[in-house]
Length: 166
Image (cartoon, rainbow, N blue to C red):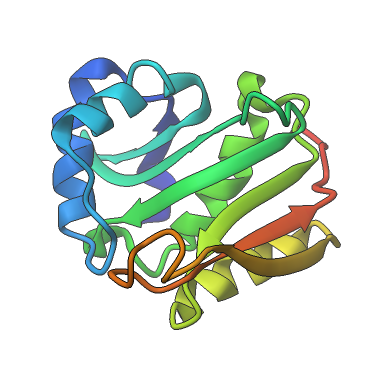
């Protein structure tokens, strides 16, 4: 039941659970355990953990780029299969925008590959909910940035996002 999901910023001790969650959510790219530890410590103010019965069932990693204080760059969203079907992704997006560290955020950016229709729909819904424009353009290209080993990542920009804090 979705009512028993709680949200919080992660703690450094959550890093291993974040790694396990992302690993359990293919096709998400896993990062190193150390990277997840940094997300849960250095970037904890802009990351969000979703807990259900003391189990990590959702995680958003993101940050405020140093040159764009009004932008939230969303790195990754993971939702455990046990928590799917509860609108958790959209709820987490709303919660992350309410974080104190995101008080100046007016737009959300993320990168998505062309074949990832599910992620494209997530951000289309975010734009619809905020009555915001959505724009995308090639950002990290297959040949120039990934040496042919990864599909081009398109930069999606959604904004302005509603700053109403409920």
